[in-house]
Every structure is written in C-alpha cells, then in structure tokens.
Length: 79
View: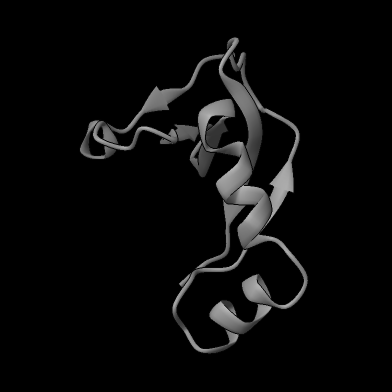
C-alpha cells in the first residue's frame, strides 16, 4: 500500500497530510505528540470544533506504512 504525501503541507514539522486510496489523512509525528494530547484534553477540542475553529477528525489505524516518526493517524471530517 502506498500513500501520496501532499507537498503543500511540507512546512508542517509535526506531521504531514497524505492521500491513500482517495481518502485524506494526516500523520501526527512524535515531535508533536504532547501538543496533540493537550488539544485533545477534555473540553478543548470539542469547544474548538463547536465554534468552527477546527475541522473534526477521528483517530484511525495507519492505512499505509507509517515510519518511525508516526505517533497517530487522523482522518479529518468532511467540510
């Protein structure tokens, strides 16, 4: 299985966005793990999504080989 890393997001030090079989995903790297955990703390994520400041997402298993930096894989909700 392969993935297509989307080059427009190359400046993201905490991970990258990629396509796999037509679905959009984001990899969160270990270097961003603490920040992601803080975002997901009770109330903060839900409040930001509720105000339209963030796109909702779900954590999923990696659909393609992830590499050593991989901490989590996210699948964003549709706009």
